Length: 78
Image (cartoon, rainbow, N blue to C red):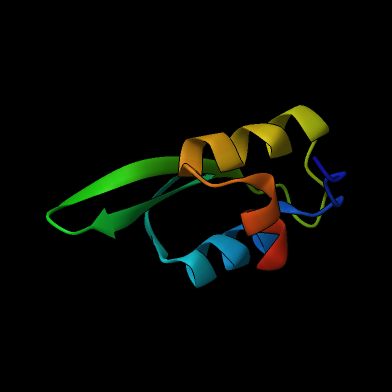
């Protein structure tokens, strides 16, 4: 597995939009995105945005799992 780049929440949201996710809610500093898969909405992803601060490594590792993507797929869209 390649090392994850240090990115902000805003950059991750931009990458997830390129993959096909749409923003559907925001609660405080967390944005919720989901993707349409044929007949239903699925794969809900939570991304924290705290200005332009970089995400912690553990948080960044959890995002591809929530999105049902590989790390390589996510990093190509960053």
